[in-house]
Length: 160
Length: 145
Image (cartoon, rainbow over all chains, first blue to last red; front, side, top):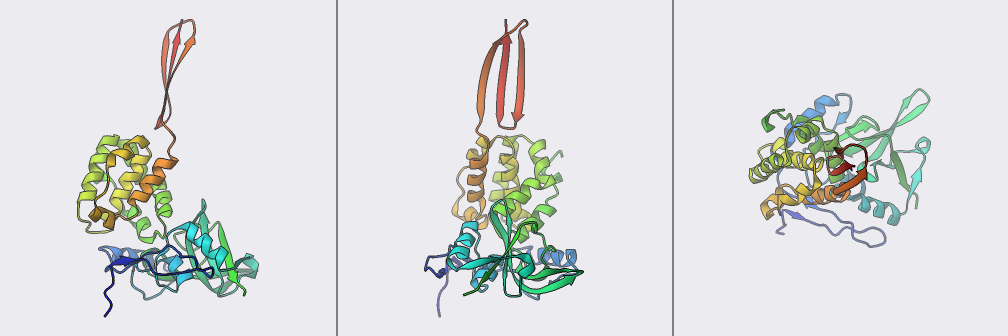
């Protein structure tokens, strides 16, 4: 049986074989994490809160770019992934399920998620996002219905 | 706010729970009313004492986890030179507050450099004007005959 450290970095590479800085935290959830998650379930009653436990093993970027394996905290790593994995920017009107949404604020990639649907509001298609909210659980939410700044969201797609 | 116990850290705790990146935590704490009020209500040395106490305690809930970050950001809104007085965190503290050193570095780098400047200007009357442009910039203008 493998003995694993409570915290470590996974070998995680871009397509260009450069390491993506990350940290998986295998410790049990912290005191209060469950209460915080319940609080967000109550604050966003119209979003679909998946039955996943709070976890510091992975965050939103780990979900979007690393198959839920680890926590990626640096905006520079997101920029590296976008560049080296050949992501291309998609206009919001062309967004499709499977694309990635990255929420930017002052140069920081503060949140990301996977587009899983489009919600029609009059003539607009509002992206529906699967993401993880920090150490809390996973949520399926309208792009603007989350605790993050949704005024500057960029959508990406790998097309080859 | 008369004591640190008066501070309502519930919003700060909520921010901490969903923070994917340390810079998100920093931005949101800077906007938080409780953090701003702590910065306004207490002297840097008073915040330093509370910060050290918070770092020495065993965190029991999310508010305990966010408390050192709250005091760090509140301190950062004042004189950035006080950030250096915090001292190095031990390994246990670094384990519990893994973004602390990074955020302290960011706060130090983005703070306005402290400038103490004395200007002497000829004038009719002798007047001393002390003007504060920000928490960390002081300018003493001495108007002399």
